[in-house]
Length: 370
Ligand code: ASP
Image (tube, rainbow, N blue to C red; front, side, top):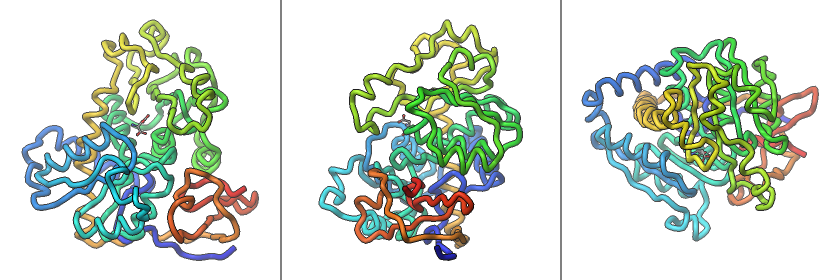
């Protein structure tokens, strides 16, 4: 085990929602609210700038809302929407792609099926990198959309009881949202999932326990419903299952119906990162408590505000985060979805998450060393 510093990228980037302080999130929300009120004021802010969207995995909302965001700021967009149409299909590494594209764009948004890929990109690119979703790991810009929705619909983050329901194991948006909300006072989580799809241990131990946040795990949505201020539904993430029969068995674990909402508070805020498969019945859409379509629009404003924030940091040459931790090179990451499984010559580095319990986590995907 060695004590060392690791520079998290060359430029200020957004890889994990915790890369932004609470104050920075507040100021991004403020900008987004101002954009919502007066979009014309922002329509020339990125004139002459380019956003590259490198999507190695399917997306509708995230990619299109990034593109719409950049166009509405007066900028331009280039990129691809599937790995097949990029040199990744010829075996190009993330590091090389990031280096090359930083010569073509001022800022890059990356979605990748491998966990840790955007972090690898940020260590090579000369422009800010935005993580637009890495495997089942993180999705910080969805969290920005979620935070704006909660702030706008509930007026606060503090003292909310938030229910997260569905696939809490593979649902990357859930992991980032828990990390973000754990920083506010009095937030309580009710984690509703089948036993097989509970949140990963790193979220429990390194985020919830560390921040001393109250949470309970349950399988029963109906029982939890009356207590909730926010209900965050998620789909079961079919593409992350190695066994299709397991997916078939779990896919309809939760379906929120209009009748069930009789049990809920009158000011419940119902959210979903979308796409919906069938976890929320269509009849719920008419209920004024349904906020999931508004959430997608709020996401565009937050992405506009984020692009402005990161380009401003780039101009000011703000140094990137340096983590000073105990690291180990003695483990090999066993997570098949970790970027170390495909990226050439990427070192296997683990940081010490808990010295007493001897817990090490992969720097790239955060899986625990076995
Ligand atoms: N759109 C979200 C994501 O990219 C949620 C989902 O796909 O279920 O993670």
